[in-house]
Length: 289
Image (cartoon, rainbow, N blue to C red; front, side):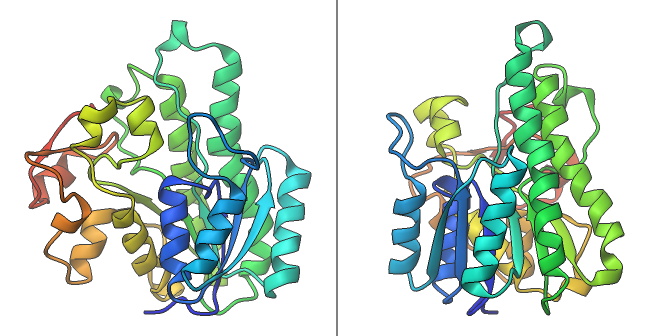
């Protein structure tokens, strides 16, 4: 189970889960393109495409920092072309970039509505579309969307219908493209966390330090993504994976390292179906939904 020599194209990977996935692959000796728009330090958010590239190379990988707004077709095409030029191809496309705003219908301005749909749904579609011709030419091609299971219950929509529509749009890309490209051997899957993950979104938007203390580290998603990307693409497609369940299938039983400071139940994430909570062995508080 190694990604040595494989090339990953990751959208929005300058921090958080995307960066964790990049670093896990880099430890194998993978090539990673960080396609994101953070070129200058942000006053409230850590990391840029250049600091991410430095970390990837320090971890043992090769990096390409690609300044790219995934809403812009020309910029995505350029980032993909530069990736192929530098590394010789693309083995995995990771659709990690996402925008969030948890507001109801009357409190969601259309500019923010458009942003979420352009980055989440359209961005996932566009990045995948640009990568697929190159994925068709590799031996074990994968698309992995950081998107939830399609649990079509009103509770996931009622408080933030615009965000849910945009996020489920990523999931529908998984559903449709996995069937469309099965004949080409391209695995298209989604990965979603069982619990909240300690990222800037949690600290700034979803409960702050209180919820962060009930969260796991991004490394659990990175380890789960690594396991998925290492599987034969023709045998593992069209799945809506949950991080803990992926790792349990790999033989992991101790998850304490992902939340060493937690003293009580972890916060369950958005969009996790009730049946997933029911079958897990982890004590989770249903914080969202």
